Length: 461
Image (cartoon, rainbow, N blue to C red; front, side, top):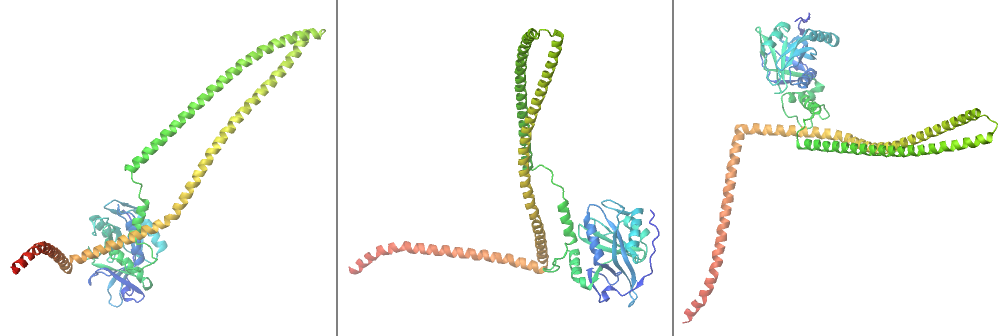
């Protein structure tokens, strides 16, 4: 595999972004004091997150552009990543990513065209649901094509939401404990929001209003919009198939009825034509007899005209008459055909008018649905946001319950429930005792009333 020649510049002496008042820096994870300081700008970090979430079924990757730097204050080297380029021609599977000759040529052309002043400071690729590590294949790529001392490897797991940088140390690749995200000070609010999203922390209310969707939420919405329709098989689908079958059956029945009606009309017209032919035959026979009688009469009147001349003139007149009849019959046929065509066009016009009205109703319904679509999308966004907030609140409550104070609070809550149950039982017992006392008291009143006269009688005696 040939990648061509890539030239790398000497480390640039520049102040670290976290010590420059023009920039805002936020630590991602926990950068160690002995780690290689790696600074990743907000723009390439956001681009890499969105690229990783665009397809989580295979591994994706690209290269990191920036500067290999040395801090003039302490002389300590660090890496500053300011741009990233996606690899567009590569070989990948679910568990591997490989640059090709075409991909490297495309990256080289893009770097020279867009960022000629930046160096290749490393590469990145994804591990969908595999975690953060470098496989033997990844180590081969880094050792052979990113072997400079300050070139890094960035691994992102878009499904588990984890990520990490690897650096050269004593001839081997080791993972750093953390890195820094940086941006211009005017973008510190967006920078803090990106860090919270990358570390799966809840975003404070009111922060970033009017900002774009997070890379993860945008990827989920794209998947929802591009998700194929579910296969048929539910009760509603079966009912729809049954309705479609009934509609096709009704349509077939209508076609059969129309064919029968058409055959009946053809049969009726054939019968009418047969009767007309029979009548025409009789008319021709009568006409032939009449012509014979007329010819005899004319021959008698003509007198001196020879029969040959008379026959020739008669045949000419007969041909003219026959031509006139044929033209009349042709015109009648044309008129009948035009009448039938007019009826068919009237029927078709009525059908098209009905279809036009139905299409107008459907168009009105679609326009109403199109007007409601933005509201539905806003409602989906609100529901997603509410679900994320509820999920974060539940996670926070679970985290609190997992601590020692949470366990104690849970035990106190259980003990309080026991005391409440005992107090309810005591109150119920007291109520029962009071009812029993009232019952026995009123039960003893009639007996005392009956013994009172006897006591008075005894005192009188």
